[in-house]
Length: 527
Image (tube, rainbow, N blue to C red; front, top):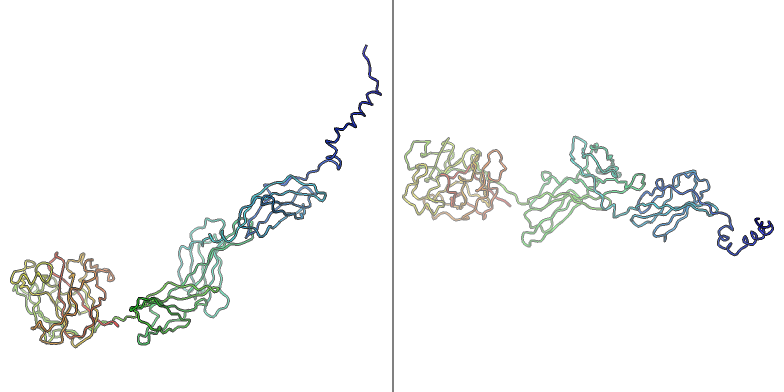
């Protein structure tokens, strides 16, 4: 038989335990009611959009109508911000004055009773001067004038942060510059009715989609350099006269030069179309245009302007020394003697020249040096060895080249300038169409005289300069390119002299080939 516990005893035991001391573990948590959490933010929808030293936190509309505030922590919770929100609308919160860096933000939603959501973390970046300083302009593929327009072309853009490139230019007298924006998807832009000589441009960037703050690459400049053909120079007053370009950013010209006496670099500028250089003692100046953009002065490329004037003597007054003897006795047009016409023959000079003619002999005369025709030339037998001293040492010995005899005379030509002339430079053009320098002299010497007897009395000649190396003598003479360095010596300075009769002596030549050939010879005066 089972014993039953009376109900009264069971009730007493329940009441006893329900009032036991263990109740302290829960009483503090349940005294205000149960804990209430708001709906957690969806971190995939919360965004942090970077701007210039700031970040915009974007919170989408919430499906929890109790939400009234957002609480944001960052910088290891040392920075804190609470903002009111409307849960039915998107909320944008700006966190300003941020150092340029990447941040982790912790966000939670609260209601008016202090209940909160479980926090979420997002990452966002603040951009600033350092990031902007690394931006580069969109690379221009080509730029050129076309009529009244200036055309800029680009390759296809692949940088998604690039919005486009902005241009500014200004005509003379205009206060407000013209502007143009070439979108990043465009590959061609037109600066219409462009009459200026400069413009500036920079590219515009947006670091992130949805951003608001624009960033710019540094300004770059298109600056037209001075045109040397439009600049006049008065040597007597050392004054330059220059055009004033139709450009609202143009601010003047600057000239720099090296003092030829001291080696000191000097400069002088002007904001007008004229400048007189003070204490000028140079051979050439470099001229640059100056432009000013928002107080910043920038300079164009420079153009070098020689203040030395090279003036060729008038060769129309020159006479040729007649060629009177070729000693092998061969018929004319075959290494024979050749007389020049009286029109071009000096009444004072007559002397032997060793002459190796080929082709049109009538054109290959001493006068070919100054007839203005570079297809004619004077071809002279080199003689023995490779220098004029070899010739002198071989007097009376026949020269094997071309069957032309040589008696050891120096190889030279003489020109009667018609009157006494001052000169301090020479220039000669080599025979064209040569693939090597074999028919070119390597070194020459110059002599002058004012005595008509100089042809028979070598003591009447005065040395001007000896053993002058001829520039370009070791290069080909490419007749299809007149500017080829092998076609001409260029202007070579010599001591200033004043003579009527001029003699050039061949001092040294290449060993290959039989002769030396010069097409045109010039003397002149630079000052």
